[in-house]
Image 1 (cartoon, rainbow, N blue to C red):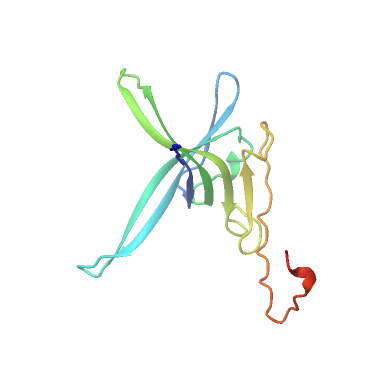
Image 2: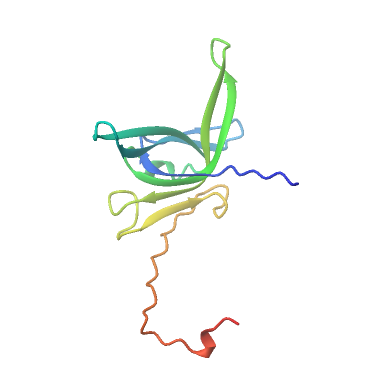
Length: 160
């Protein structure tokens, strides 16, 4: 039996702080920011609404041109993978940290919120689609209209 595993994360939340850009010794940029995601539920015993907010650290490689747009409070869509790594702090103690290494980042919202005008608009950065040295922004595709029941379907429309 083959072993399968999946390491995929999708976050939609708000930035908790402005993105910070640093460079490795080989001058590769690394952008870091945190995303707040919340869930809300009604307590069954008290009947009161409760809310829980989770803060997730995100790392985005080779996206220094996107960093100025990643400002505190902006809503973002992040897709990537979870990574846990360790390092030694200044006191020599081993520290573990878990973060999301982003493959795709989309700025959500309307004008003034980081995206394009209109509902569902956004600017996208994809590690797979963009050149290594510069992120590529594009507008998210507009939702297509559902076909009407009045539309005629002919023999040419059947796929078999």
